[in-house]
Amino acid sequence: MSVADKELEATLQKLECPFTWDISKNNIKDLANLPEKLLHQVKFGPRRYHAAYLNILAFMTDLQGNGKQALEFLLQAEKVLEEDKQADTMFLVNYANFAWVHYHLGNLTDVRVYLGKLEKICKGIEGSSQYSCSLPAVEGEKGLTFLRLGAQFYERSKLSFRKAIEGEPDNVLYNTGYAVVLYRLEGMRPETDVSPEKSEAVIQLRRALQLEPSDAELMVLLALKLQKSNKHESLMLINNALRLSPDVPQVTRYVAKYLRIQGSVDKSLEILRKAVEVSPKSSFLYHQIGLCHKLQLNQMFQAEKTGKFRVPVAQKRAKAAECIHSFKKAVEVKPSNEYAKINLAEALGENHQLAEAEEIFQEVLKNESLLDSDRQFCHLSYGMFLFYKMKDDEQAVAQFKSAYCVPGQSTRREQVGKQLRKIAQKWINTKWRVQEAYELLDFMSAEDKQDRLGEENMRTSDELNPEVNDISASFEKMRSK
Image 1 (cartoon, one colour):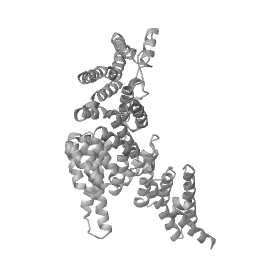
Image 2 (cartoon, helix red, strand yellow):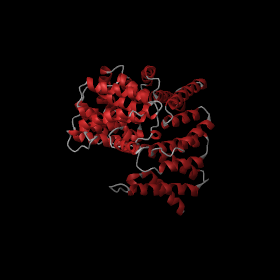
Image 3 (cartoon, rainbow, N blue to C red):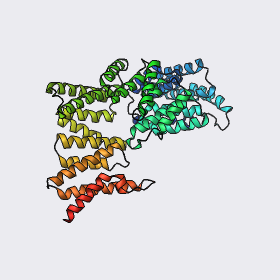
Image 4 (cartoon, one colour):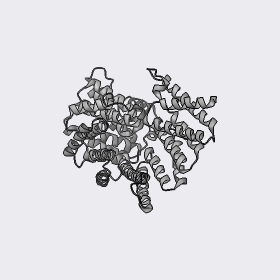
C-alpha cells in the first residue's frame, strides 16, 4: 500500500458511518437473514426509516463482498433523502458509506468526490472536523443501525439514541428508536422486572406516543408492558393498533403475542399464520407459533392432571410434533435464537427424544457469548429436563445451582429456588441424602447473602427469601436433635 493509499484510508477512518463504528462481521449473528428483514421493513415500515435501512443494507452487502449491490442501496437511500428534502446533515452517513464502498471497489476518484461532499457539509458546522461531525442526525442513525444489527448492539444503540435526544428532544425517530431499544433491553433481563410506573421502557414509550400518537407499533409494545397491570388500557391500545395497521406484520406479530399471553391461543395462531405468509423468514413468528402450540400442549397435560378429561396419546404427540416443527423453523431461520433452541429441547423432551434434547441443551451452554439471563434460563430448563425426564437429581441440582448463582432477584430465580427447596425436602423426607440437603440450603442462603451485598438498601434474610430461611431454621432444629 502506497503512502497516498495509507493516508486515504486514515482519512476514511475518521468518517462517521457503520464502517468506522467498530462493527465486526463476526458479531452480526444474523447476517444471512438481516438483509431480507430490512427490505421487508422498507416495504412495510414508516418512510422515515427507509434511508437509514438502505444505508445498513449497503454496509452489510459490502461486508459480504458485493460492492456494486451496496452502491445500488446507497443510491436508493440518497434518492429517499432527496425526495424528502432532508437537511444536508442527514446525508453525512450516506456519503461516508459511499466513500468507503468506492474505496473497497478501488474507485479512488469517486472516494475523493464524496470526501469533497462531506467537507462541504461540515465546513459550516461549529465543532466539526474536516469530514465529519457529531450531530443528532449522526447519533440517531448510529442508534438505529445498532438497533437493527441485533441484541449484542442494544446497549450501544441506547447510548446513541440518548445522545441524539439530548440534541433534539422532540425528534420522533430518535424517541421512537430509544423506546424500542429500552423495551427490548428490559425484555432480555428478567431481573429488571419493575412496575410500569418505574419502567424506563414504559416511560419512553408514552413519550414517543405523545410525539407520534398514530404509531401502531409503539401502541402494541406499550400494551405488552401494561398487560398485567392495566388490562383496560392495554386492550384499548391493541384495538387502536389493529384499527390503524391491521395488515402490518410488525404490528400484528406483537398483537398475536399479546393474545397468547391473554389466553386467546387460537386467535393468536390465526394471526401468526397469516403473518408468516407475508414474512416467511421471520424467526420471531415461528417461535411465537411454537409457543402457542407449547401452551396448548401444557393445557392438555394440566387437564389430565386435574382430572378434567383424558387427552388421547396421539393428540398429545401430534401437538408435540407441531411444537418441534415450529421451534426447528425458528432456529433454522435464525441459528442465534437461543430461546427457540431451548424451547425446541423442551419440546423434544416432551416427545421422549431425550438424546436430541440433551444435545441441544449442552450446545447452548457452550455458547460463551450468552447473556446471563439466557444462561440462567437454559440452566433452569435443562435442570427441569434432567429432574423430570431423566430422573437424575444430582445433575439437575448442578444445573439449578448454576442458575441460582446468576445475580439479581427475578421470577426465574424464584423458580430455581422453588425447585432446589423441593429437592432438599425430598431428600430430608426420604432420609436418603440429609446432609446434602442441608448443604443445598446452606448454598442458597450463602448466595442470597452475596446477592444482598450488591443492593443499595440492605434487607433482612427473612424479607428476601422467607421460605428458604423457615426451612433452614426447621432443619437446624432437626440437626440439634
